[in-house]
Structure formats: structure tokens, C-alpha cells
Amino acid sequence: MEKEVVLEQKDAADWAYRGEGAVNLVLAYTGSSPSFVGKVLRIQKAPRNGSSGATIPTLLSTHEQLLWRDIDGIVSSPNKEIAAQLYVLHVMSPLLGPKYVDPGPKCGFLPVSRFISERNATKRSITRFRMHQFLKLHQGQIPELSEYNPPDLFSKSKDRIYKAMNDLFTTPQNNFRVFLNGSLVFGQLGGIAHATNLVVSEAFEDALKSVIKADNGQRTKNFLQLVSDTVCESGVLDQLLEVQKLDKFDIEGAVHAYYDIISESCAVCKEVSGDEGSHMYTSLHSIPLDESLKIVKDYLIAATAKDCSLMITFTPHEEGDSESPYTKIYLEATNQIFDYKVDRA
Image (cartoon, rainbow, N blue to C red):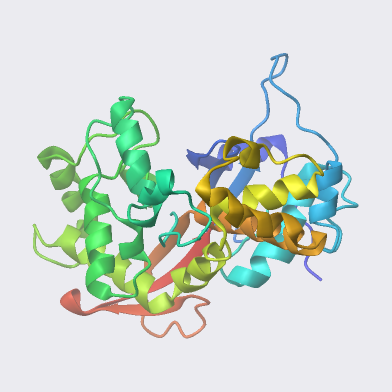
């Protein structure tokens, strides 16, 4: 049995900031301990000492307990931190595969739920990512639209996956970062991210010369090909897409099941009362409680999968290293072999 590793305050210097979401920070290990080399750590944000930030509830609500009652240990967890860990371990890990999930980019399909109202029909033809791009541009959060299209990345087509990577390189925003030996060499950790200009492009090309054996001007192209081939050959996004597709009803359908679970009059149905489309929601309010629970659970699980980040670590393969725990990939253009490891967070 592996010995439990306890981190202390002095260990903080060995972890470097890599990114964050609304709730969690992602840190990368920069020390020399074999137990942590190549690892990242996701930790939950907390208010500063003495701040008036909202406290995180220690126990699950009644409705949360109802949703997750059949998952071992979640309802009896002493706090939400442990409940979240068990959620990853017992819910997400079996679905995505423990190889890719560490128990402490975005939606790859267009929704087809019949419960999507006509006023929101654009969701069937324009990706969630693209709609957010227009909103961010309107709000001044980004200076230009990204050409990146998530379904390209999930397509299993090498050409489309490469296009997705190239689009991310052209307008990375906060969606694409590259680290070399622990140092950020491409992308930003915050602020308004501009499109990749000539200076940034040339600096990245130069940074790759110790990794990609190609002539100047060809390294970035080959690096993007390496990432694309790895995404395609590893199949890392296949399971992720299947989990995302657990959202069969879209939020416009799942919300009706939610109101039945909490035993409240459906506010959405009140808004569409008398509307021609309101009759289609009647069936959702007449199903058994267990089915309503499944709809909401699947929606929440899919939402988690839609917010996953993908981290790929590459190391030049050393001849004769048959004991490497990593998977190998061959970059034909440069005749190089790399060991790689893929993680989702």
C-alpha cells in the first residue's frame, strides 16, 4: 500500500501557478521529488484571511443528497472537499477512465434536444464556445473572435484536429498554453489575450529549437502536428465526448426535472404558459422521481466534462528506455519519437 504523502507549508515553493477557473487553481510541480515530477495539483479557492468572502458549506444540501445518494461515500462525506473528490473518483473516473482522471476544452458537440425552444434554436447550429466569443467581444473581454471550433478538436479527423490546434495558436486567448521545462513559452495566464503576432510567433519558434529538430520556420508547424497526432491517436477525447453527450435534454429540458426534484412549481412552465410549445414539457413533469434524478445527474456530469482542461506532457524518447511508463508517438516530419502523458483536469 502506498504511503500517504502530506504537503507542508515549506513545500509551497515547489509548486507554480499554471491557471485557474472560477473555483479552482491549477499548480504545476517544479521540485525534484520523483513522486510529483510531471504532476499538477488542483486546489479549491478560499477567501483571504479576514475577508468577507462567502464560506463554503461543509455538508451537502437535501437535494444534493437526493441526487448522489447511490454513490458510495458522497452523502456521508464530512465536507464538500471530500465529496468532490469522491465525485471524481466514483462518478467521473469510471466514465472517463482512471488513466486520464486524477481524483485530487470544452463542449465538442451541438445539442439536439427537442426541448430547446425556438427562440434559442441557434444553439443547434452555433457552438456554445462561438456564442461566448461574440458575447466576450461585445463586452470588450477579447479584442477579436477566435476561429477555433471545439467540434474540430473532437472530430477524430487529423486535418480538422490540426486546424483546431492552428486556430488555437493563432488566437490562444486563455485556451492554449505551452510550458517548456516549467516555464511559460506561449499563451497568457490572465488579462486580455491578443492574437499571436510576429514577435510572439518568432519567440515561440526559437524556444522550440531545443525540442523539435526542424529548420527555422518549421518548428511551430511540427509542434502543432505533434499535439494534433497525439490527440488523435490517444483517443483521449473520445470518452470525454461520450460523457458530454450524457446531456441529452439540454438545460432547457433538465430544468423541468430539477423543479420536480425540489418539489416546486416549475417557473419555466409559468413563463411559457399558453405557448404552443409548452405541451412538450408536460411529459417531463409526469415521469417518476428516479428518472428526474437521472436527467439532472446526467446533466451535471456532462457539465463537468464540458469544462475539462486537457494537459499533455512530452519528453523526447531515449533509445533503450523500455521501462518508460509513458506512451510513445512518432513525429514523421522530424523523424523523432516522444513519450507523452495525457491528463484531464
